Image 1 (spheres, one colour):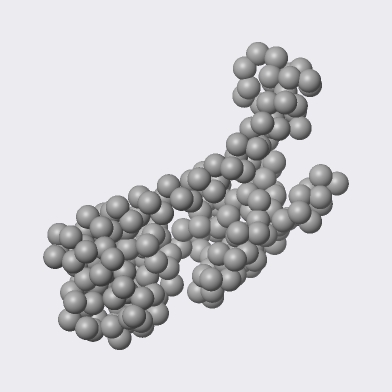
Image 2 (tube, rainbow, N blue to C red):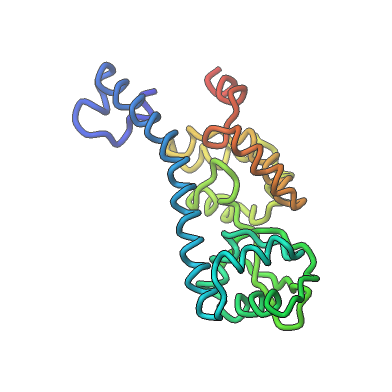
Length: 223
């Protein structure tokens, strides 16, 4: 518990009665705001998609309606990224929907990773989408932990799925107490689902997790 109080001011970092209250309150806010964060990001993605679609003469509702009827499997996160960083690719998606060309092959909904980019072609003649593995998609992994894994040679969902939990914990422990408190018990399982493109199953699993941990892994970590 006192490890979680590291960085607090005054007695909050070294007096048990004060630190305990601060930690419990902080964990409560963290649980609540993880849900709030998801809502805020979804709202941001919708705003970006809406702004981009209106530049091409289509409303957001019409665009998403055509997306649902097509076989283009891109979620709002990827569409918003295309709208911001790859407007030509986004324009191709809009034109494909407007022209009724909805025969695009399913594409795994993964965010563009600047460190490692692979070209994945949508089955429309106009578009190419830059995609790559972003380990931060895994519940419990943030950008800094993803950076630690990248430095250790783990850069893809496949590599993370095959990595032993013990190795992942060693990487976290070596980075200091700030990262050692994390439990990577479910990270390979989540990565395997992402690797196989099972995004609905991944979302269902993540909805059951608490910062990437199940109740069982939390108990195991405490022991």
